[in-house]
Image (cartoon, rainbow, N blue to C red; front, side, top):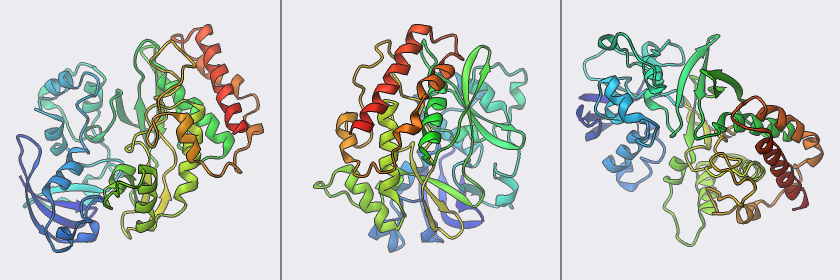
Length: 380
């Protein structure tokens, strides 16, 4: 497929994409170097008008549903597509996280015609990803932001009252991740940490979290992983230092304080999966101006969600393998108000009580662990 990578209505680079594999085969003319995706254009070759196809393919494939998604192979079979990368082409690569898309050659499509921020989208992909049978498979509509949703948990985009909201499930015996999102929301609200609030819903007896997209038609989320690719990593630098150097060079404001607050939150909730794709930075898609650290989101993989051994020392990401080591990166605790967490245990107990999959004993252990880890931060 001959097409042009677009940034809203700005043509960025001509591409040839293999429709069987969904991968970029050839790169043609670069039209607007500054509008290339972050992490793909910061090489000398790109500045001379030559773009590394491997870098661009890594970004493009990173937009697809990961192959680790629960029951993804069965879903692809029901959708009638070969892979998650070919599914990308069915929605022009459109996302609710940024403003990039591919426009096929010899079409008159415009951003206003296709973007999911202003246009409705099909429910078909989301329903199949959730395991629901589709009566009319011959007329499936694959125009959906679900084609570009990341992560391994079951999820789908829905429109509620005109708002684009992500509905995300849990895993294992406890199905605890949606409840953890509410706990994280409660903590961040009390500590005045910028965050995306989550609410709880149930479907067929299972808990799901719901959150509204915080990206607008004028802004976009750039994951930390992409920012890390903008500068060659000096092996003498830790990844924390490297990320700070990258954000300084890009002139992204107020990064260190925001990272420190995120690490404090992750310590309290024993987050084990704060990888470089579930935090990032916000910029203006039109002017390319950086606004700063994104509100914190995606905190569900925490609080011993997949084990009965509540309280055991958890692993951490992204900067250190243990929270005890990672919290040492935090230099300023002056903002931390432990008194704001008064009666937090009661609120968390009420949250966990919403699910029948978490019994009273586990609920009690979780509350004690949260309170203990919050006290430890206060001690530090």
